[in-house]
Structures are given as structure tokens and as C-alpha cells.
Image (cartoon, rainbow, N blue to C red; front, side, top):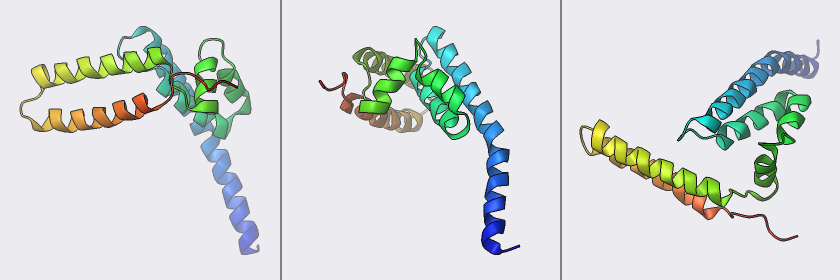
Length: 139
């Protein structure tokens, strides 16, 4: 068998092996996102974005279902088209990070190291979230 043909065959086999894993990973993230709709402080959109990515790589049917979902679709579409994070989501993310940081610093941390590292990561995430537009541009 010619090396180029062998490489293409190997890639096809690998893609068939990875597809079920990506579908399972997508559904895991849909499940986690669903939990996030009822558990305060647990994100929803991040898990749905990860699921959308996994479905885009593995299942056009599941991708279309999630992208056009009545509850999650508009947020996913706004992110995909304009990189928009709704104001309500920004506010909720900021409050959740602040409460989590305060809890960690007061009740969990034994020294200054953990709150400093976690606070730095949270600050970077907050800057990213706040730097995204809150509404799609006027068309």
C-alpha cells in the first residue's frame, strides 16, 4: 500500500474511533449545562459551547439540535456570530466569582497562596467576560 493512501486510511479509522467519544463528551457537557440551569453558581453556557464544539466535530444532527434549541440556541448563536455575552450572564458570572473567591479566602485557604492564584485566574476570566460586548451590533 502506498504511504499516502495508508495515512489516509489510518486517519479515517481514527476519525471513526473518535466520533463516539466526541458525541459522548458532547452529551456529558449538555448534561452538565442542564445541571447548571438549576444549581446556582454552576455555569450553563460554557458547557453548552463545549457540547456544540464536540457535536460540530462528530454529529451534524446533534449540532443543529443544540444550535437551534429554544432555550440555549439564542445564546449560542449570539456567541458564534458576534462573540456576545449577555449582560445578565456577565453579572451572574461576576457575582458567582466574587462569592466563590470570598468563600475560598475565608473558609478554605490556609495561606495566601491559594487565594492569590485563584484570584488571579478569576480576574483574568472576569476581564475577558467584561471585555465582550453585551448585545449584538445593530445590523
